[in-house]
Length: 279
Ligand code: AMP
Image 1 (cartoon, rainbow, N blue to C red):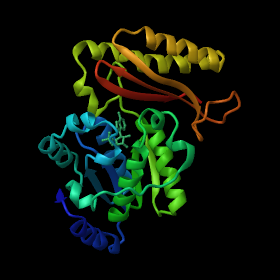
Image 2 (tube, protein in one colour; image 1 turned 60 degrees about the vertical axis):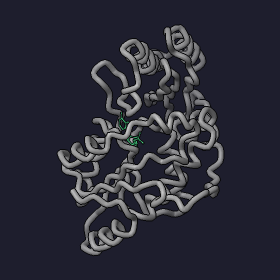
Image 3 (cartoon, rainbow, N blue to C red; image 1 turned 90 degrees about the horizontal axis):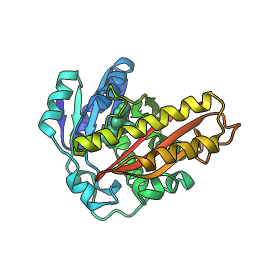
Image 4 (spheres, protein in one colour; image 1 turned 90 degrees about the vertical axis):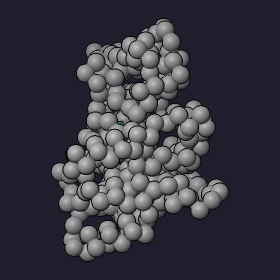
């Protein structure tokens, strides 16, 4: 695996790769890699000739400085996992390689930016679009792979790609879960043994919502049922449980073409998100 820490060296290398007619697949991450990340890499390997994975804990997308500080950064273990998985290129820049200084610019993407995650993490998607835009400019991938785990993020990046006419194909990959249903996340290492048990309420509520929907329960009743279940779980503070239109992320209507159930909650001191596509 080739490792790059500067954008110029990476760009130069990838110019040659593309000139050779190779299809470049890109998997952006913040590291602390788990099987969710590796499943994205696998998809990229299946669909592309050369795979680039980035590890960059992007400061501008953290609205809570403590969250940024305690974000896990096991870079040596991550390198080994990528090497083992057959990743071709790792891009692992420092913050000053990505940002010139105080960058206040942001892309106006409308309501997608301020509802659900955007409401609870103000400014989060401004940081996400900043960094993904920069990464797309550096890597110029043919295809980029993102997890459904961050469903709203995929919608946001899709909107950015449309608005800026970026020549990249986005691929959304399914959520990898632990055997008991917990969605894999770099933040799960912060869960205590008790939190770990309480956290299961999230995936359970989502799967129950899907089952209830299929059994004909109304959207309002599904929402009430799920919210109650999550609120009643000890150690768990729900932020939202929403049945949203899968395209706009506005509240779903019975005739929405696609519907996704999305949840965010604090379990102990850890904020978790998850979702299930129910139609
Ligand atoms: P992160 O390192 O958390 O920024 O995530 C990097 C990419 O991995 C994002 O596209 C995430 O949506 C994706 N990802 C994170 N967790 C999972 C998971 N459990 N299953 C599939 N993809 C995931």
